[in-house]
Amino acid sequence: MRPFQLDLLFLCFFLFSQ
Image (tube, rainbow, N blue to C red; front, side, top):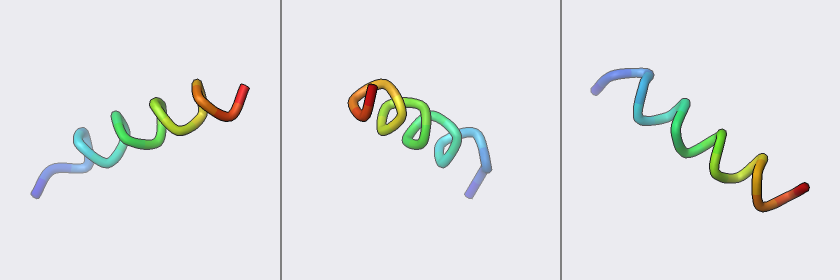
């Protein structure tokens, strides 16, 4: 598993949180 996928998920979450 790569950290990239997790990073993408975090980014999506951050965007939704905004």
